[in-house]
Amino acid sequence: LWAPGLLALYTELGLVAPARRVLRWLLDEGLDQYEQSDDWPATLAFLAEAALALEDEAVAGQLRPRLAEYAGLNLAAGLLVAVFGSADRYRGALGSLLRRRDALDELDAALEMDMRTSAPLHVAHTRATRAVHLRRVRAPARTVTAEVEEARRIAEPLGLRRVLRTIGTGAPGRLGPDGLTGRELEILRLLAGGLSNRDIARRLVISESTAAN
Image (tube, rainbow, N blue to C red; front, side):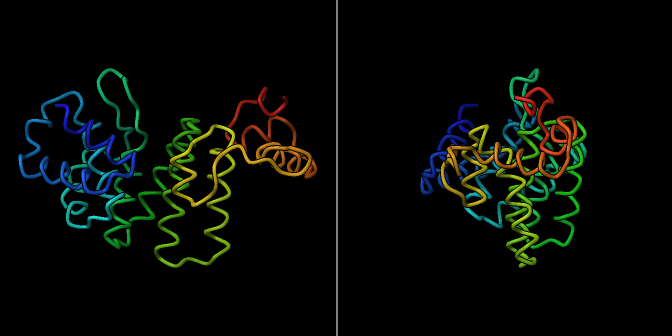
């Protein structure tokens, strides 16, 4: 059961050839043995992330139906050892790669769940995935930019490097005017717009005390 973890490691490090080799090996050996494990949702997530990183449409087509049973649910491994976020985000991302028309509907469903469960990490990942999809379908530039900015507002202060790589921005922690972070600048803009700490917290998916600080 170590192979999916190795695949995840290769994918995260951007090691294309090893990731492709392990991905093919897993599929050739068959996934049935993994379906009986508590780690199957994690394995699905690792496989999907590799297929997306490699832009392998054939593998995406194989994996997407396997995620259908998790529609409307979060993917979690074991007894909440790891939570990967909405399965609909993975379905939508694979669907986007396959140019499916329902891809955005699935990403919308994922974002709704992320927002409803107040999960900023997953909101950022879903926003970034939506930005990739909108670029792929050549949506208006302002629509793409709005999605990127929403993802960046969460990702920069939390140091979510994968999200920042996905949306194509620089490293987290860049400072703006007077040494302010991107999040601090955003909060200043919202304050100038007359929003309260509570309003700002809801808008940025952070706690009210964080907004106040």
